[in-house]
Length: 554
Image 1 (cartoon, rainbow, N blue to C red):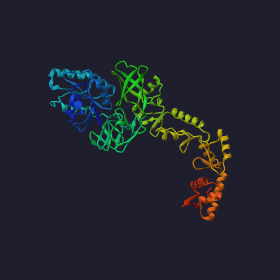
Image 2: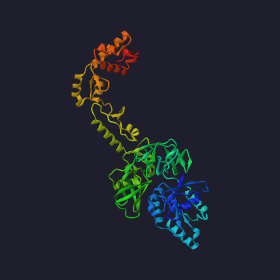
Image 3: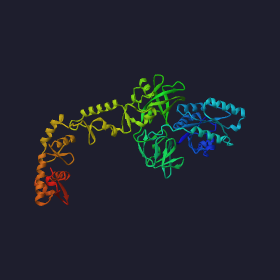
Image 4: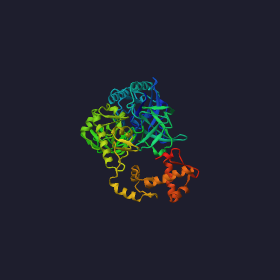
């Protein structure tokens, strides 16, 4: 099972140096990082363990100014590598990074006491005791990236922690939160991120969220190696043809089409580190978004976001206001605007069915214990109450529709193809109708009578296309050309004349047909084109001839 390990720790405690010693790769790729000797952005490397396990490493900056970058890198990881300088011990960013990991639900990992060759035994033992107290239950390994001491023990400890771990949410719909976008010559735009769930392969169609653009995957790599399909838990790079670099950014997500609904609200169960103010920065995936916190009782809140996010039930968020003040477990990623304690309590204790309204991907409910009591259609789950409400809404719209054509378009939503058949409505073409319903003139009766008085052999312009179509279906006129009509009697008169001439002479020209009817060239042309469309005639050079079945066509 692919897994990702993320570093954590204070600036200058040796995270990047340790990662290079473990993997052979310097994750500081930016010139300013190498010049200043500090990490500014996220770095990545593959780590081969002695037992054959291959971990993806995300190296994060340790400076307090880049905590937001650390959070972006830590989301989606499965275990941590907390780096503590053996001489300095835990420092402010050690504590904040560790708090962020806990808020993200990353509770398994290893503590590395770096620069152990530069301290005496007593200092090293004190550092070890502090680490054990800081992260109870986590293996603590003293290492030196300079001498290589302890590196094998550290690899073994990481392997032991990784053994038995399963990437959370790996069986859900595809979702990759983008943390880096760049362009390569001959390849185009490339987006990278940790694949939270699902899989990605060449030729897959994905949706950019929250923007909604559809993109196609040209190729997939995992740590610079081309693969047929990348799996959840891996660090993934996808090449996206036809996409400009400026059209993607950190914070976007690549998702399975129709699997997630971008939302401006999240219902969360809170975990507070300090008093959470009403305005915070919400970190979800690789996105950072300003939000208003609406408290619901002491344990819950609805986060009202300034920009939409793509979340699933069970995701975790980090809340910051200058420093990290808390976090939350997403109870409902697409909640109603009204937030109630009763509803949140139901969903938190696993009574998901009582809180679901509009359709959500059924896969997204698994992490909270399934969706018993909900209606399922295709890959969607929703409440019977919502389905009844949708039916009532559509029936009301149909009753208020134009009586000439009492139908309405179905909802333009990803779930429509699966849900609409359950509504008991008839689908005719592109619209939904009440069973057995038919059009009627209603308030159009006077206009219909007035129109019919004007009809004859000369085509009349009809402005109301719906009325014209209805009257034609009733046999009260015949449409010709683009928006014109003649009377039914005139049409039959013209048809009889055409059939008689073709049977007598074998064909009829436009000029001959015009003279037979005593009309202008344009009128004759419109009628002949209608006869062609009806299958009565076909063109043969400059003339028309009857089709074989033309003489018995109605």
